[in-house]
Image 1 (tube, rainbow, N blue to C red):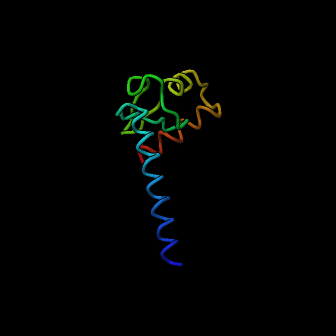
Image 2: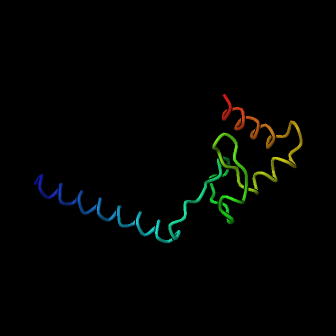
Image 3: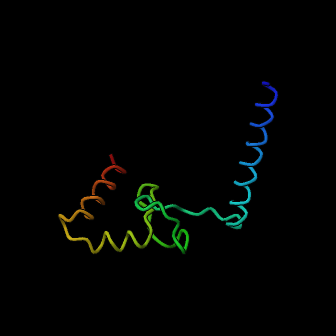
Length: 87
């Protein structure tokens, strides 16, 4: 009975590894950034946003940051995230 469970977990692990390999292949070997705020991969890759202390922000979030009114919920969210990066 233990043998069957071990075999099933091996099969599950092999399937998991294959799925990850296919996902990497679909990105053509490119390492893509993920936005620290919205957790999306930007369309233009590394050149579609900016970095602060190693954290990446996409251009959409960058635009929201630059146009947010001081004191608005969006502005406060950005200040919270940015303060968390530095402290």
